[in-house]
Amino acid sequence: ALGGVGLFVMEATGVSAAGRITPACLGLYSDDNEAAMARALKAAKTYGSAPMGIQLAHAGRKASTYPPGNPKGMGALSKEDGAWQTVSASAIPYNGWHTPLALDAEGLARVKGEFVESAKRAVRIGLDEIELHMAHGYLMQQFLSPLSNQRNDEYGGDLKGRMKFPLEVFAAVRAAIPEAMPLGARINATDWAEGGWVLDEAVVFARALKDLGWDFVCV
View 1 (cartoon, one colour):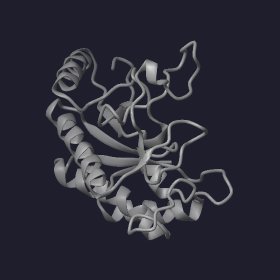
View 2: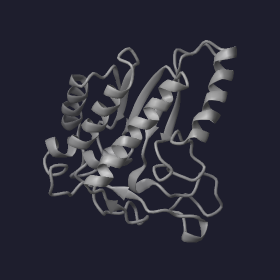
View 3: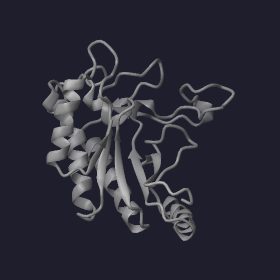
View 4: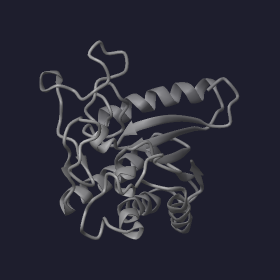
């Protein structure tokens, strides 16, 4: 906050306990989370002038893993160490990790609501900007990529279907926060994998986000 930077962003902040990458990850989904972050933000703004933003995220099938530096490595948590059920677009595990549950209609509504509630908490404590994490193989990208999304309903299949849930989440958050508050997205340009998300799809997705009222994209 004292460094004179143009924008400070707290990255990968879970919108739910189940959406965290590891048990040690930052979250903004409870009253205790909100109060703790408000204290930290107040201190930062007392001593520095940098705008303070947050990246709201859900790890999807890449959740419930060990934190970096853990002697057991960075793979999936064991049951003994507190593993939890992960979710994704489809029930396809990542890299031999936990097998996620494919989100049904109720689950989709719940996750969308979690993003909205975390965004409202960000507004209440005085954060200046919100970025939605839709990259790095986490939940939103799991819907976008044909490697992880093999659904046969309206949220899968062609690019329009795979974009549907991330766009719904973005639109819901945009509607829930002040019009003047900057809102953007972190997206992948490519999966760097055969049969995966490609640059041309990223361009279409970015344009769709712009139509919904984005202020920036981080690629």
